[in-house]
Amino acid sequence: MKDDVKKAIRGIALQNASEHEGKTRNDAVISKILGSRPDLRSKAKEIMPLISEIVSDINKLSLSEQKSELESSFPELLVVKPKQERVGLPPLDGAENGKVITRFPPEPNGYPHIGHAKAAIIDEEYAKMYGGKLILRFDDTNPENERLEYYAAIKVGLDWLGVKYDQIKNTSDDMELIYKKGLEMIESGNAYVCTCDKETISKNRREMKACKCRAGDHDQNIKRWHDMFEKYKPGEAIVRFRGDMQSENTVMRDPAMFRIIDEIHPLLIDKYRVWPNYDFAVAIEDSIDGVTHAFRTKEYELRNELYYTILDKLGMRKPKMFEFSRLEFEGMPVSKRILKPLVQDGKVSGYDDPRLPTLEALRRRGIVPEAIRKFVLSLGFTKSDTLAPFDTLESFNRKIIDVTSIRLFMVTGPVKIIVKNNKLTEVELPNHPQRDMGKRRVELDGNFYISGEDAKTLKVRDQIRLIELYNVKITKIGSEIEAEYTGNDFKAEFPKIQWIPQKSAVKLNILIPKTLFVNEKFNEYSLETKQAYTESHYLELNEGAEIQFVRFGYCRKDSAMQAIYTHK
Image (tube, rainbow, N blue to C red; front, side, top):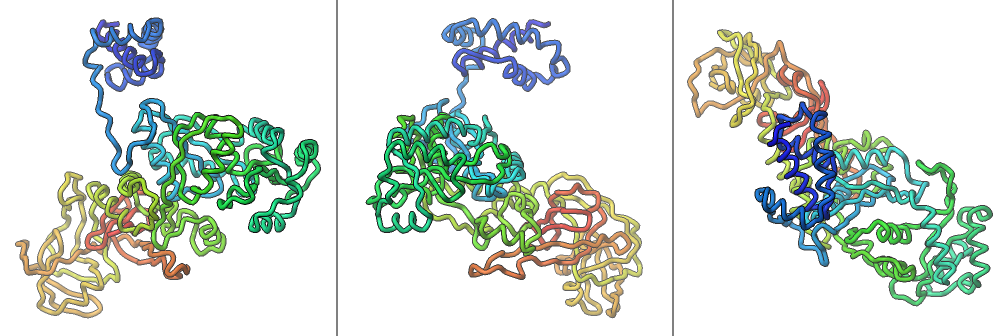
């Protein structure tokens, strides 16, 4: 093996080790060497033994020895890239570079939406800002609402967004530990088992009254705890945190910590029936996962007191908690309580219906991940309510897709026009007005469709220009329009009209999503279907291709017979 290859590998290994407390790994080195040296990609198997040898040698050196060799032999690798602060995100209190751990903890009880995107992007951006780590943790301790398809949908949504996480886990992985902590709370007198009915508990909390169960002794609570696993039925007993029934913060009035749910869990089936509430589970999980900075929406702000008090009672490490505003669009609610009935009642076609704020719907509509990220970061980190107009996201999306969207002609309400003395059999049209995206050939025979709206404006002897083709003069108007060729010279005063060759026209339905809710009521007219004709080149495009139909707007190819309007 050439000396330059050995040197390159050693430099990368030293750099990686110095960045990771003196230890490097084969996989880290192989990915970087193949990324920087494409000529070695065909020799991966050949260089692996050499990489293993060099990695082993580097790991035997002390961190100071590694840095010294790196400085003397590979000074070019010591260039430190300036830490770039993400737009809209302020510095994190108490953050140390390389030590920040954030987490995105969705419950797998529905499809991810724009609100999830905001949370996941903020979590990831802060982890990247400080060279830290992001954990994807499914908060799956309510089997009544959770399904396997939702775990998958969340992963698919994050992958589409480009959110990279360093670890994935489920809260349900730690049930035995959570039970241990729950029992510890009961043993220490910081929790008790309550057998009052739901209505009594709610009434007492409103009136700041303690129930008789709060006075139960240690033995009674321990017995009831064990009975919850076998004897009690759902709703007959819950574990409650011993808080402060006089607190002005209603969250602290002896909230529930565990309840009985006899439903099949999507992963654990029927292994457990006593499940922790969110407040207890999230505190335990954040602490044991090493989370340094936890983010959640501001409706949880009053729960911070309970979060920290639980960790104090258990003597566990406390992360820093931050709140930000929820994100939804005007007329596009994100609440599962609202969206689920729309799907179940058939008012929308599914969770990918382009009127919805789900990630599947936004993707299908033609919104790209980069636009969502730019949009989220433009909002900044704020607690102010964020009810954004959809056109704000559209403006980011437009700038991104414009440069890659092929231009095609499209007409609606088609009217036939016959150019009697057409002499062209084909024409080449540019796929983009500014960028080199190639050209397409269009066969001609003088028979065209033009838009009905354009046809209405025409009179006999009018002269028009068929865009990118030639000028014609209108000679007859009836069920069909007749015209004659008058030349190629561009005339600024001639109306510019788009056209489709009749013999190769492709019939197309264009779905046009509109505001889903108006004045908090479902808009029965929120999805318009427009019939149109477009060029045959449409059929050659891949599904998902972004198109700008001239004088109409941007659309995404949904199928051979259907496109979805994205925005103007």
